[in-house]
Amino acid sequence: NAGVTQTPKFQVLKTGQSMTLQCAQDMNHEYMSWYRQDPGMGLRLIHYSVGAGITDQGEVPNGYNVSRSTTEDFPLRLLSAAPSQTSVYFCASSPPPLVGGGSYNEQFFGPGTRLTVL
Amino acid sequence: AQSVTQLDSHVSVSEGTPVLLRCNYSSSYSPSLFWYVQHPNKGLQLLLKYTSAATLVKGINGFEAEFKKSETSFHLTKPSAHMSDAAEYFCVVSGLNNAGNMLTFGGGTRLMVKP
Image (cartoon, rainbow over all chains, first blue to last red; front, side, top):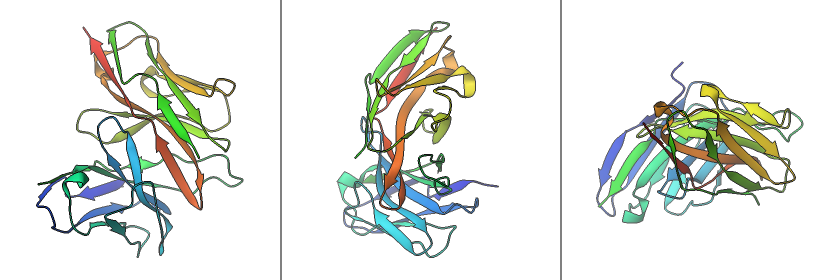
């Protein structure tokens, strides 16, 4: 059971280049999310998915696309990289909230991808 | 809308002394609250979580937190700091936004432990 895996661990891009950050989980979790971590700002939600074929925007979605064709995979695409997208990116997964609401499961985080855009 | 404020961006303690990391939250729902720890260049690890059961929650590595609804606080404590506790700590509130399981993070508190 590998948990949540992310590739690559490090990436350097030039402004305007595109790339895809990969995320996979083997826990059969329905919920998956992408966050970016910037100093002093904690983690901010980029996009999330509540199941295969369903995605939605988080707090900072501009410049990023996602898709969810399978339960296991949730790739994040940078369409045209900008220096403002230099950050550490974390993927996370979780089961859905417990029945009855009001109680939410923890999210399991991948090890992160450190992205630098020059 | 929900938000989390970690009141100290940096906390420095001596090894063997108590740790207090402060967190205040706001939420329109009955929240679930979490503390995560991040060691340098590592991912995030769950320390503990509150999900409307006991208000005093015990976590890993001797940490615990108390949920105080009247004060909208969820402070993290440990009786005796260890060098290995040096890390960044995040207070997190979880709640529904549309159909999602949304996490809102505080800005983080960096804990330094002096020998």
